[in-house]
Length: 227
Ligand SMILES: Nc1ncnc2c1ncn2[C@@H]1O[C@H](COP(=O)(O)OP(=O)(O)OP(=O)(O)O)[C@@H](O)[C@H]1O
Ligand SMILES: [Mg+2]
Image 1 (cartoon, rainbow, N blue to C red):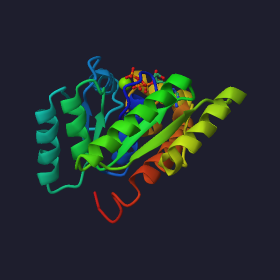
Image 2 (image 1 turned 45 degrees about the horizontal axis):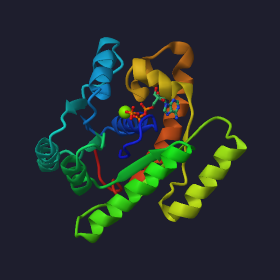
Image 3 (image 1 turned 180 degrees about the vertical axis):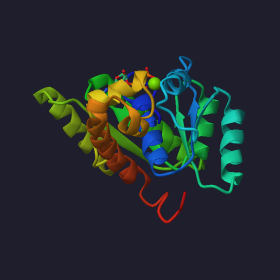
């Protein structure tokens, strides 16, 4: 998950991908490069509430070598697993390493002028990195969509299609209260099983929506591989 802009949905998207992968039996490793340790804290909360899974780990690091070591270690393991990096994007060494080890780059954005300006910058940066010979996957722009778009937000998203073309994902990250509730609870797939009884169906349907984004993002990457 890459973009230097705050509050675009990186951590939310990371959490959702982790929940979808875990619900499908993949071991999940999150790498949290965020100084605020949002994912580390989240895992603590999830474990305390019993809304976590033994198969899901969080590693906190801002060190590019440690990112590489972690991904290499996971690659060497016999079991296919999913590693999700929540990238804060301040150090260029770290950003370069994350680009190199990633199979998929997701750039979430909200419909604001400054978010979209950042998407443009990050895509340009990635392109330049690739032109210098870097092995970087093509980034996918994920629109983080409010319940009702205002006319000007709608126009901004139109601009995204004009500017970024097929890099824009077909699936949207819709605004869902359950996506926000994960922050203080745990893994959405576990919430759908063991969370507040009156909300479980809601969590399950939100997980299904997230699975569609996950499937679009990973199409071809995880196909045919077993957990
Ligand atoms: N689609 C969504 N539905 C509901 N809540 C959302 C959604 N996207 C983001 N949020 C909420 O908005 C806040 C900011 O989102 P998030 O933490 O994912 O952004 P971020 O890009 O990781 O921000 P930062 O740069 O600060 O780490 C969070 O409280 C999150 O729960
Ligand atoms: Mg975050």
